[in-house]
Length: 361
Ligand SMILES: *Cc1c(COP(=O)(O)O)cnc(C)c1O
Image: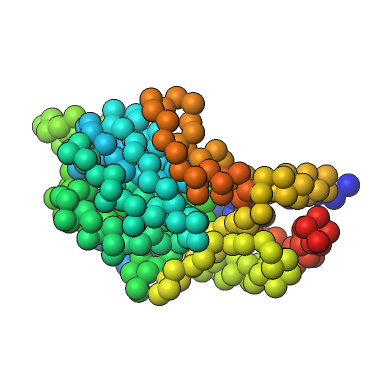
């Protein structure tokens, strides 16, 4: 039997390079609390991404929750997208706010900016869209709506590492953007995430919030522990050296899929003036029956794509009210992400494409 192929596989740097970094931790004799490796990774990432007001934190979900806190949002309605990972909605609920769903644009799979204004009420505090699969939202329009109605914008940019729009990192859009450096993501620190603030003052607040809200003995505000450790930074520093090569390799794999997959399988449209990070290869089948047929055929050959995202978040069983989002519900029923990771060889991509061709001929 052939080797199991999963939707993703975490990149692991040469172990000797990681060991060198670990030896530094022993020398420094500091394991956490903004140690030298965390500070070095923050400096390197700011340079690589071209961003300021950047914070390396424990994970992307805490980053979303802290983003609401940093903008003083403790209740009210947050306009968000139903087509995302559960963390986008759960962070809103966890912070005692109410998610209000705006359906997606079926072409880009990002929130449909044309439908946002109609859902704004006196209780609306913020908009929390997602750059789905690293594809930018309609950032200009969303920014204009937010300004007009005095709302904050928090981008869940968990997929957007290295992706740009109009020459700027996607992390630079919104009052706060958050990233995820989880092991399954394009750039990883095992567990980890980041926050990027537009304003210096908000950035300073995040710095306090993420380490218990105090400076020495001076307790300034309620905080939490969202620090990352030196070991996570060590992994990040090793991986960052390879990230351009990883993205180039994924671009090549993406081109093979583009060339060999049946034309009837749709992939989300890319926005203009955007550079992709090739983080995912989503394909949309004509319906759920076709999706299940293709997935079963692949799984029979030990190939495991992932239904991503499923279910549409407006259908989560623990929500207070039921809101309908027909486009998101339909896409969630018929989309999967195909295997895409550094090290995936052409023979395997050919094999995957042949199985899919056979099923939807
Ligand atoms: C992965 C992910 C998150 C959560 O990030 P973690 O670092 O795993 O907490 C949030 N939103 C989206 C869209 C994600 O894909």
